[in-house]
Amino acid sequence: MTSETISAADQRMKRAVDAMERDFQAFRTGRASTALVERLMIDYYGTQTPLNQLAGISVPEAHQIVIQPWDRGVLGAIEKAIQKSDIGLMPNVDGTVVRLNIPPLTEDRRKDLVKSVHRRMEEAKVEVRNLRRDAADELKKEERDGEVGTDESHRLLEQLQKTTDRWTAEVDRLGAAKEQEVMEV
Image (cartoon, rainbow, N blue to C red; front, side, top):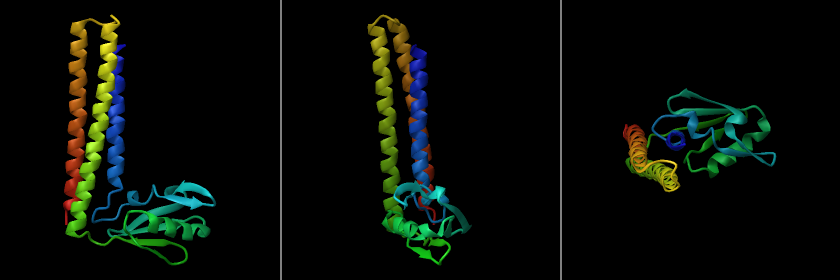
Protein backbone atom coordinates (compact mmCIF):
# COMPACT_ATOMS: atom_id res chain seq x y z
CA MET A 1 0.00 0.00 0.00
CA THR A 2 2.75 2.46 0.91
CA SER A 3 4.67 2.39 -2.37
CA GLU A 4 1.35 3.02 -4.07
CA THR A 5 0.94 6.09 -1.87
CA ILE A 6 4.26 7.47 -3.12
CA SER A 7 3.47 6.50 -6.71
CA ALA A 8 0.08 8.26 -6.51
CA ALA A 9 1.70 11.36 -4.99
CA ASP A 10 4.31 11.31 -7.78
CA GLN A 11 1.56 11.22 -10.43
CA ARG A 12 -0.35 14.09 -8.80
CA MET A 13 2.86 16.15 -8.54
CA LYS A 14 3.51 15.51 -12.25
CA ARG A 15 0.01 16.75 -13.07
CA ALA A 16 0.60 19.90 -10.98
CA VAL A 17 3.82 20.65 -12.88
CA ASP A 18 2.13 19.89 -16.23
CA ALA A 19 -0.67 22.34 -15.37
CA MET A 20 1.92 25.02 -14.60
CA GLU A 21 3.63 24.33 -17.92
CA ARG A 22 0.30 24.68 -19.79
CA ASP A 23 -0.32 27.97 -18.00
CA PHE A 24 3.14 29.17 -19.08
CA GLN A 25 2.16 28.66 -22.72
CA ALA A 26 -0.52 31.31 -22.35
CA PHE A 27 2.02 33.91 -21.17
CA ARG A 28 2.69 36.36 -23.94
CA THR A 29 6.28 36.59 -25.05
CA GLY A 30 7.67 38.62 -27.93
CA ARG A 31 6.45 36.14 -30.54
CA ALA A 32 3.05 34.83 -31.55
CA SER A 33 1.75 31.53 -30.21
CA THR A 34 -1.65 29.91 -30.66
CA ALA A 35 -1.59 29.02 -26.95
CA LEU A 36 -2.27 32.70 -26.18
CA VAL A 37 -5.85 32.43 -27.42
CA GLU A 38 -6.85 28.81 -27.88
CA ARG A 39 -8.26 28.46 -24.34
CA LEU A 40 -10.24 31.72 -24.43
CA MET A 41 -13.89 31.04 -23.66
CA ILE A 42 -16.31 32.38 -26.29
CA ASP A 43 -20.05 32.86 -25.77
CA TYR A 44 -21.27 30.68 -28.64
CA TYR A 45 -25.08 30.92 -28.76
CA GLY A 46 -25.32 30.99 -24.96
CA THR A 47 -22.68 28.30 -24.30
CA GLN A 48 -19.13 29.04 -23.13
CA THR A 49 -16.90 27.26 -25.67
CA PRO A 50 -13.08 27.27 -26.03
CA LEU A 51 -11.90 29.21 -29.07
CA ASN A 52 -9.97 26.26 -30.48
CA GLN A 53 -13.31 24.41 -30.89
CA LEU A 54 -14.85 27.28 -32.89
CA ALA A 55 -12.08 28.33 -35.23
CA GLY A 56 -8.82 27.47 -36.90
CA ILE A 57 -5.93 29.30 -35.24
CA SER A 58 -2.66 29.83 -37.11
CA VAL A 59 0.55 31.85 -36.89
CA PRO A 60 1.41 32.98 -40.44
CA GLU A 61 4.14 35.37 -39.22
CA ALA A 62 6.25 35.62 -36.07
CA HIS A 63 4.18 38.57 -34.80
CA GLN A 64 0.66 37.71 -35.95
CA ILE A 65 -2.08 35.26 -35.01
CA VAL A 66 -4.94 34.58 -37.43
CA ILE A 67 -8.24 33.17 -36.17
CA GLN A 68 -10.59 31.86 -38.84
CA PRO A 69 -13.97 30.83 -37.36
CA TRP A 70 -15.92 28.06 -39.01
CA ASP A 71 -19.13 30.04 -38.43
CA ARG A 72 -18.95 33.72 -39.44
CA GLY A 73 -21.71 34.53 -36.97
CA VAL A 74 -19.30 34.09 -34.07
CA LEU A 75 -16.80 36.77 -35.24
CA GLY A 76 -18.29 39.43 -32.96
CA ALA A 77 -18.26 37.11 -29.95
CA ILE A 78 -14.59 36.22 -30.61
CA GLU A 79 -13.69 39.91 -30.91
CA LYS A 80 -15.52 40.71 -27.66
CA ALA A 81 -13.87 37.83 -25.77
CA ILE A 82 -10.38 38.88 -26.91
CA GLN A 83 -11.02 42.47 -25.84
CA LYS A 84 -12.26 41.34 -22.40
CA SER A 85 -9.33 38.95 -21.86
CA ASP A 86 -6.10 39.96 -20.15
CA ILE A 87 -3.80 39.21 -23.10
CA GLY A 88 -3.66 42.90 -24.00
CA LEU A 89 -4.19 42.60 -27.75
CA MET A 90 -6.64 44.42 -30.00
CA PRO A 91 -8.34 42.22 -32.61
CA ASN A 92 -8.62 43.35 -36.23
CA VAL A 93 -11.73 41.85 -37.87
CA ASP A 94 -11.88 41.94 -41.66
CA GLY A 95 -15.14 40.08 -42.34
CA THR A 96 -13.90 36.48 -42.38
CA VAL A 97 -10.92 36.33 -40.02
CA VAL A 98 -9.63 37.94 -36.84
CA ARG A 99 -6.02 39.10 -36.90
CA LEU A 100 -4.01 39.74 -33.75
CA ASN A 101 -0.78 41.66 -34.18
CA ILE A 102 1.73 40.97 -31.42
CA PRO A 103 3.73 44.11 -30.65
CA PRO A 104 7.17 43.81 -29.06
CA LEU A 105 7.04 43.83 -25.27
CA THR A 106 8.26 46.81 -23.30
CA GLU A 107 10.80 46.33 -20.51
CA ASP A 108 8.15 47.06 -17.85
CA ARG A 109 5.75 44.52 -19.38
CA ARG A 110 8.54 41.92 -19.45
CA LYS A 111 9.22 42.51 -15.74
CA ASP A 112 5.50 42.16 -14.97
CA LEU A 113 5.40 38.89 -16.91
CA VAL A 114 8.43 37.60 -14.99
CA LYS A 115 6.60 38.40 -11.75
CA SER A 116 3.59 36.44 -13.03
CA VAL A 117 5.86 33.52 -13.95
CA HIS A 118 7.34 33.53 -10.44
CA ARG A 119 3.87 33.72 -8.90
CA ARG A 120 2.72 30.70 -10.94
CA MET A 121 5.91 28.83 -10.02
CA GLU A 122 5.25 29.43 -6.33
CA GLU A 123 1.66 28.21 -6.71
CA ALA A 124 2.96 24.99 -8.29
CA LYS A 125 5.53 24.53 -5.51
CA VAL A 126 2.83 25.01 -2.86
CA GLU A 127 0.68 22.43 -4.63
CA VAL A 128 3.59 19.96 -4.72
CA ARG A 129 4.31 20.55 -1.02
CA ASN A 130 0.63 20.05 -0.15
CA LEU A 131 0.64 16.75 -2.03
CA ARG A 132 3.78 15.74 -0.11
CA ARG A 133 2.08 16.61 3.18
CA ASP A 134 -1.00 14.58 2.29
CA ALA A 135 1.10 11.55 1.30
CA ALA A 136 3.26 11.88 4.44
CA ASP A 137 0.12 12.01 6.61
CA GLU A 138 -1.13 8.84 4.93
CA LEU A 139 2.22 7.10 5.49
CA LYS A 140 2.25 8.14 9.16
CA LYS A 141 -1.32 6.88 9.56
CA GLU A 142 -0.27 3.51 8.12
CA GLU A 143 2.60 3.41 10.61
CA ARG A 144 0.24 4.20 13.51
CA ASP A 145 -2.17 1.50 12.33
CA GLY A 146 0.68 -1.01 12.32
CA GLU A 147 0.59 -1.66 8.56
CA VAL A 148 4.30 -0.72 8.25
CA GLY A 149 7.21 -0.62 10.67
CA THR A 150 9.01 2.51 11.86
CA ASP A 151 12.13 1.88 9.75
CA GLU A 152 10.06 1.24 6.63
CA SER A 153 8.03 4.39 7.33
CA HIS A 154 11.19 6.53 7.60
CA ARG A 155 12.56 5.03 4.38
CA LEU A 156 9.30 5.79 2.58
CA LEU A 157 9.21 9.35 3.93
CA GLU A 158 12.75 9.90 2.62
CA GLN A 159 11.68 8.51 -0.76
CA LEU A 160 8.68 10.87 -0.72
CA GLN A 161 10.98 13.83 0.05
CA LYS A 162 13.26 12.88 -2.88
CA THR A 163 10.22 12.76 -5.17
CA THR A 164 9.12 16.16 -3.91
CA ASP A 165 12.60 17.62 -4.43
CA ARG A 166 12.67 16.26 -7.98
CA TRP A 167 9.37 17.94 -8.91
CA THR A 168 10.34 21.19 -7.17
CA ALA A 169 13.56 21.23 -9.22
CA GLU A 170 11.48 20.65 -12.37
CA VAL A 171 9.29 23.65 -11.46
CA ASP A 172 12.45 25.75 -11.06
CA ARG A 173 13.87 24.52 -14.38
CA LEU A 174 10.68 25.24 -16.34
CA GLY A 175 10.27 28.62 -14.64
CA ALA A 176 13.85 29.66 -15.44
CA ALA A 177 13.35 28.66 -19.08
CA LYS A 178 10.11 30.67 -19.32
CA GLU A 179 11.72 33.65 -17.59
CA GLN A 180 14.57 33.58 -20.10
CA GLU A 181 12.07 33.35 -22.97
CA VAL A 182 10.12 36.36 -21.64
CA MET A 183 13.23 38.49 -21.15
CA GLU A 184 14.56 37.65 -24.64
CA VAL A 185 14.38 40.74 -26.83
